[in-house]
Length: 90
Image (tube, rainbow, N blue to C red; front, side):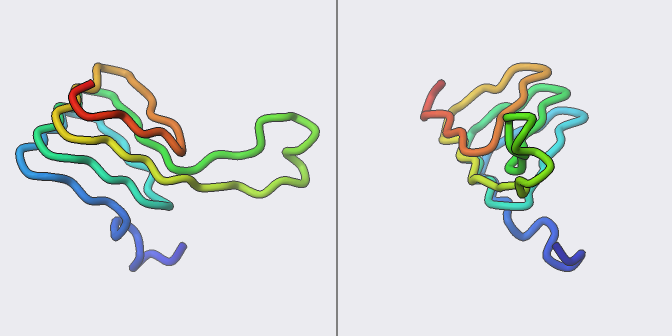
């Protein structure tokens, strides 16, 4: 991904708060709703690699959209993996 495109894939709703050391790996879309609370040391990642060890030498990295809906609270040290949707109010 070219440098000028970095960060263009993240949307953050009104009233959302992120604490310290939150990492967004945004090679694909990350959608964070309104009034979301994100505690320290959270990672939200859209990129991964094949899980099976025999597939890794031949497999490509892949990206999946991450959606965090409104009124969600994500606790400290959580890792949100590619393709995950966290439902409203969870």
